[in-house]
Length: 296
Image (cartoon, rainbow, N blue to C red; front, side, top):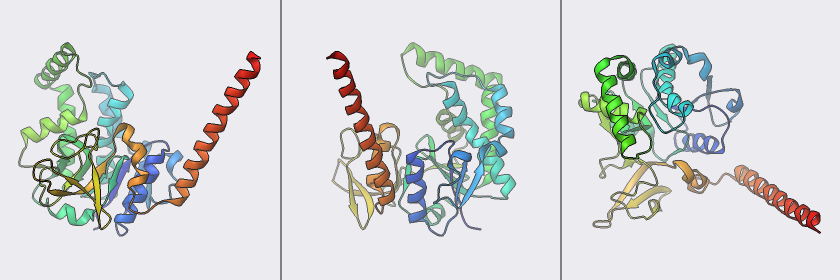
């Protein structure tokens, strides 16, 4: 069975268009599945579209036990957890055992089937502590993770541990809090033999944890990327060694850079961007002129 590349995203966004197009360019033989809604059902790079609402049963049950302990908005943080229940339900209903699931700000540059073969001995592959490029190598692993997330909010010992974590974070003035990233961290710590990370093996290339995470790589605000045979590489600070990236993660404001990092330019999107920016500039000019006229 082929290995689907899945995106979970409601509403339409330019970066979703760019990310799904890039996935199709680099993995033309794999299904590109979007668990979305009516606002994004016509994205042409998607080969399989499903409505999140049709796979929301267990996610809705999780909402009943969820306790919000984060400086992020409740809607955002809750859905970050719920998406894994949505993915699990979709996989079960479609009879799918394995898949990649990428955030809509991730650009893929490698054959995802080949990359998955490097992790044949684990259930889940995360990137550092994050699920923004998650490989579900065994559906049971995802189900066990979702059950673990439920335990985080229903088991008294785990619940107390989360309370203590969040209270300490607040006392230190830290942002964020209890998130799905923390859940992946705890799950990986408890079951290290079942979870691998895709950002550690520089020799065989890595999944990017985030363009803004420079770490060992050359770069100030973000990693400095150079290209070889249409593939992105970063240079290590020590030794100037080049490391290949299987994907790049354009989190936050870095989303604006996604179009310029595509394997092939999207002239249609370029035209849309130019038209949008021209209209925005004309509106600013119109407002300025009207303001001057009123003041005259």
